[in-house]
Amino acid sequence: MEKVGLRKKFIGDRAFYKRVLKVAVPIMIQSGITNFVSLLDNIMVGRVGTEQMSSVAIVNQLIFVFYLCIFGGFAGAGIFTAQYYGSEDEEGIRHTFRYKIWMGLILLSIAVFVFVFFGDSLISLYLKGSEDSGDLAAALNYGSGYLKIMLIGLPAFTAVQAYANTLRECGETVVPMRAGLVAVCVNLVFNYILIYGKLGFPVMGVNGAAIATVLSRFVEMTVVVVWAHKHTGGKCRYLKGVYKTMRVPLSLVKRYFIKGAPLLVNEALWSAGMAMLAQCYSLRGLNVVAAYNISGTVSNVFNVVFFAMGDAIAIIVGQHLGAKRFEQAKDEDNKIIAFSVFIATVSGILILSTSHLFPLIYNTTEQAKTIAAQFLTVQAFIAPMIALMHTTYFTLRSGGRTIVTFLFDSAFMWVVSVPLAFVLSRFTNLYIIWIFVFVELANLIKCVIGTVLVRKGVWMNNIVD
Image (cartoon, rainbow, N blue to C red; front, side, top):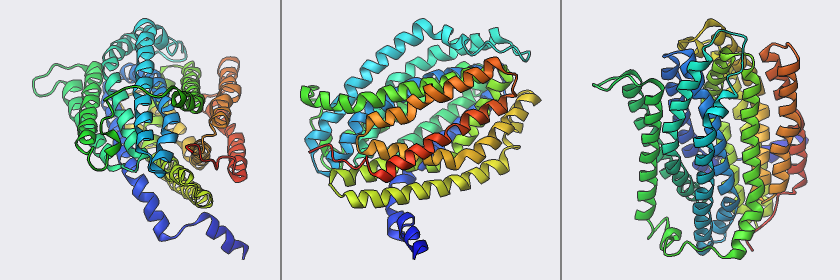
């Protein structure tokens, strides 16, 4: 009986998985294609040289902080959007969309200021390693040029997220996927043309990679925005007249901000924490920077499937909570979490079986290839743990428990993970892989905390009434 009970609790029927995959598969495809093209982009730049690949990796790590600030800044309003959609409140959706636009403009202005005036100093933080013979001055020069071009694409990225997130939260996941597919095709084609100087274009190296990325951002923005405003009479009724005013009632701004501020701060601190971890690892030299970049890019291709489960929780569970279907929300959340851990286990097996192959594609040192294969081996074993952390985080967030998610995520990062990496990288002679292992294993504490909080049901709240 107990076995049957566990099966019923964690395994759904065919209709359940069909419903989950209907939401998750377009997100998986979009993220999968994006990450696959990022892998090809990474390989193309990696074929040029170690310094070039390392400089691009460093800049992308810094811009990643901005990306997650946008996600965090929009996420608070997004919780309301999903629940407004569940309760069929179109005016509420318009208010959250306008809030996202304003929040995006504020965050974009801050990011441009920081990168323009402090970009080179931030890149230099990652060029302190002295354990190999990498050309640090060349890496700084490549990174500086790459960053200046990438800044041009940040407004388009911000606009895409405001529209695409709203579409997803209202159940439309296919259109953002299609836009993403078009964008990555543009990115891939122009990467090949501009990096290597094909079809009469000059050889532009890392600058060519940046231009290709910027072009793809504007193409993606055009596809999403045009489609959304062409369907204001149907699927996107909530966008009809959305720009007649940009005013958001102050009472709602306070509600969105109170729920969203912890998420914004959380994403900012968490992404800054990830950047700090990469900086700690970079003290072991450019070979480690290159290897960490290779392993992260490769593992992301395999991990998109279970990462999409977090978005599925935000959408499906959020809509159940908005409609006050609390028991159904709890039941389906358990099943999605279990499904995610299972998928992550399969992903881990695939990563492990290919960990020694992908680094061979890159035109980098043998040491960097060896370290990259070792990073991938570790990531293969921790994939189920990452999936559990990811889905419990999104479960807590779906019910508006943003203070809890802040403590669960970024507070843990800066209290445990970053200090551990800082101490091990600066005050010990441990091999880089062992430092990485110890930092990642500390996340087992988060798995226990997240599981307990989800089981207690502290996240089952309706926040739109």
